[in-house]
Length: 182
Image (tube, rainbow, N blue to C red):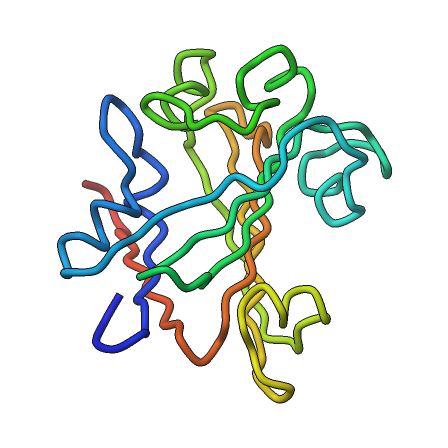
């Protein structure tokens, strides 16, 4: 997050979040004098979109657990995210429901033995569809950023895929990379 409605988006704080912590997004917004909230719109089993099935190493149309959230800043929706897990990972867990999870999904998954060891993010700009335009309150010529995050465990097996859509004019991506040995 930066001045105005702009938000510097760094993924790293969210990948290890939830280990006994509160809502990282709300805390990040509050640290900047803003109000960050989330609404879980939908949760349950669904057919995986092709992009998601491929990223999870599943056959096209495989059934997965899906959770859709809207992310709000000062009462305005700034992001729509759908998170997907194989049924073998999230089936039978509270991820199938729309209630908030104490400690967050990252802590829940860690308790099940799924922790992020490698994360791949692909980002592209595109024009929004009508639903995205309405949800994000965009004008007819406002583009979005489409981010797909694939999370893999220590064995290189993908266990989570996030597909997020942000209003491009209000975003700035920030990546910090550590290279070399220690």
